[in-house]
Image (tube, rainbow, N blue to C red; front, top):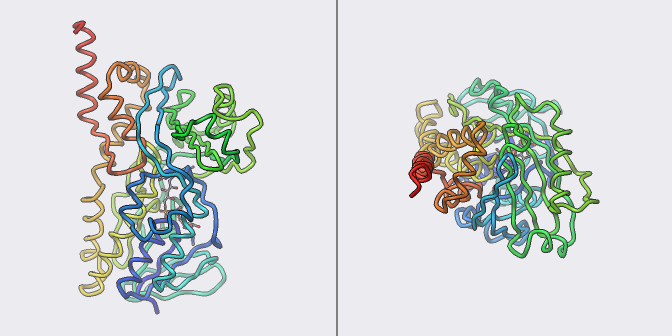
Length: 397
Ligand SMILES: Cc1cc2nc3c(=O)[nH]c(=O)nc-3n(C[C@H](O)[C@H](O)[C@H](O)COP(=O)(O)OP(=O)(O)OC[C@H]3O[C@@H](n4cnc5c(N)ncnc54)[C@H](O)[C@@H]3O)c2cc1C
């Protein structure tokens, strides 16, 4: 019998397991895949994440694939590009997630890697995870870190399914490239690009240069995402025509994936169960970045669970987790949901036109690109600043 069964060994589950085990709890980590495994992802995150998790920083040479130093944000009509010096660490999820999992196992988490959870029964003090191989695992409580299609979120009733408007469908490829080519195309600064609403469709495209690969991806909000593979091809053709990708770029690794971009689940805690990371919709609605939120939520969850083992595993005691993550980064979602509306509205090109004339707007926008909750976009200030620039333009001052 385990104290905690964590389902999912991505950034959320491995981080939660590591801290739970470190606090002396008997924890097991379950994942359907065998590791190392690749998770379709851009693999970019704010460098500050490494300072936040020092055990990760110590092993950075195992997963860090360069620091990209200049971000360029393109308008939907592709006529305007705003740029800013915002550093982003680049990784490959195969290596990154493997280091996270190893860190959890080193602290004593028991491994059920390569086992799919098929069904859960939640009862505080005596829960059960049934595995696809016919075995089952008993635990006092369950953590759902099983990603965007979480069975824990669904079966606990915390988040039954995401409506299409709150899901972004993506295509992403990791394109192998020689170092010379990478520096030629993206400079020593490893310039990375975001495309707001490519082709006028709500969503975003990106190109992230790394040490030996170039990550290319396109995401479109669910309801508009029919025909995504064809639109992705158009996007790639465009990048080639701009000399941002080689004519013979090898896109054979292309994969589809979903990411929840409509803000977090209303409830993330129930009796004997909580959900973290993508399972709880903790993804930046503007950039689709969720690695940092997943890890920070995993750590908040572990602390709340450790306290709950002294005070009872009911909803009321576990609510401390919900309060902690909301205090930490809950506000980001509100601001960025509003910003997402601005950037996917018919007025986006106009907004870029105004932004082009104002350095402060450019700084505010570019700082929102690094997938970090520390770089919150202050939507209110941004709107006020935009209005001010418009007014100045109208008055000719
Ligand atoms: C195309 C794309 C690009 C992205 N780019 C970025 C980026 O550049 N930067 C960034 O910060 N974020 C990015 N994201 C978001 C980021 O990938 C997620 O927010 C992050 O992976 C969330 O971590 P997680 O641990 O919650 O879930 P995941 O990383 O999805 O991990 C969930 C784990 O649960 C396992 N699992 C699922 N179901 C079961 C089951 N039934 N039984 C057992 N195991 C199960 C899976 O195998 C998986 O290992 C991107 C997402 C996509 C789709």
